[in-house]
Structures are given as structure tokens and as C-alpha cells.
Image (cartoon, rainbow, N blue to C red; front, top):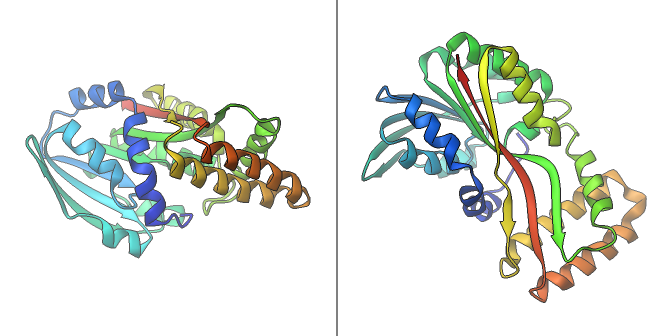
Amino acid sequence: MSGFSADWLALREPYDSSARDESLVMQLRQRLTVRPLQAIDLGTGTAANIRHLAPRLGGEQHWLTVDDDPELIALQPRELTGPEHHCRLQPLRLNLATELHRLQFDRCQLVTGSALLDLVSASWVDALASACAKARTSVLFALSYDGRIEWSPQLPDDDWLRDLLNRHQLGDKGFGPALGPEATEHTRRAFSAAGFKVQTASSDWCITPTETAMQHALMEGWSTAAAEIAPLEHARIAAWSAARRRLIQAGSSTLRVGHQDLLATAQ
């Protein structure tokens, strides 16, 4: 994977949870009637995706959590319990880029992931769709970046910076050339071709003027990515960052970041 820190995952978790499309999750719950539910979560990190889904799916759940970062695996809970759910989490350290074939999808009813599809390659998604089709398992992927960034108030170089970032998103994140903003569309086509019914829904981050920590983190990360794509444009990128930072610090900046959720169910 791409080495996300626990601090970044903690910062983004509440934005992820509030952005997700709940109608897709409710459709999934209606379909998954067998308990205990057997599920696989890909690129689990600290298990934010499971923390969101577990109370909404309800009942007894057994999750295989798949990641290759030992520090993040160590932060995963082993149980999650609420009024209507009880989850057991079993960690598996595995390199998803090279060892996807090791997973036994035929032993589960659900495969999930969050903020993953935009990092992987087209061939990886195609292989996943084939494996899930053979197992006839349901699939839910949340929060795939779709290339949309909307700042308010706007600066003249906002679109230019966004375009540099979107080019950076297509680079190798450990899986080969990444799908980046095209992730949801490619995944929709791949799973549809494999015989699934596929639905998508927007799950945008909406970040308010008072939420400065998130805006600063995104602005700085995007500036770094842009500089990797256009190293000769350092001064222009720095000027954009400085102008955007002043607006954030003044409490005058709002930000919307486009994401998509995808539900695929075997027909």
C-alpha cells in the first residue's frame, strides 16, 4: 500500500463516516441475511471502515482484516460490540498488490474497502471482479476519489493545482499505474461485465471554514503531490499554498472533495 499514517487516518475518519452514502449500506444489509456474517475488508488500516459498517449491518459478524502495515494492524481492535452487533476481527498481514489470490473469497458473503480503489490498477480491479464473481460475494467500496475539488472562495490556480494532483493520482501507488479519478467508473464496468448489479453514489467530503486542520492537511499534501509532477513550478505552487493558507487561517475557506461509493451484488 502507500504508507498512510495513523494520524492521517484518524483525521479523515469522521469526514469519511459523514460523507458515505447510507442508502447503499441499507440495501446491503437487506441482502446479507445470514449470520454470522463472514466478511473481508481490504486495506483495513485501523479498521475505520468496519467501525462504520458494523452497527449498520448488525448481528454477529466475523471480519478478516487485510493490510500489510504492522503498525496499523496493531491499532486494529479485535472486537467491536454494540446494542445490535458483535464483531470479531482477525488480522491478516498480506501484500494486496501481489497476494490477492491468497484470499478465500468463497468463504465470505461480503468484500469491502474504503479509500482503496483510486490507488490500485485496472488489472487489479479486474482480477478482484473475477474472484468475487466466482464466489458470488457482495462488494461495497467507499470513498474513491473522483477528481473533483471545489474550494470557496476560488483562487485563480485552484483548477491548475487540481489538474496536477489528478495526474499524480495516476502514478504507481504499489499496484502499478493507479486508476486515480477513474477508479469508480472502471470498477463499475469491470463488475458489470462480471455479472454484478452495480450502483454508485456520491460521498463527498464537505469541509467547513472551522475545520482548519483537515483543510491544512489536504492543502499541504496536494501541494507536495503537485510539486512532484511539476518540479519546475515550485514558485507557483508555493504562491498558491500561501494564498490558500491565509484563507484557511482566516476562517474563510470551505472545501468539497468528490468521492464515490460503489455497491456490487451478484445477480
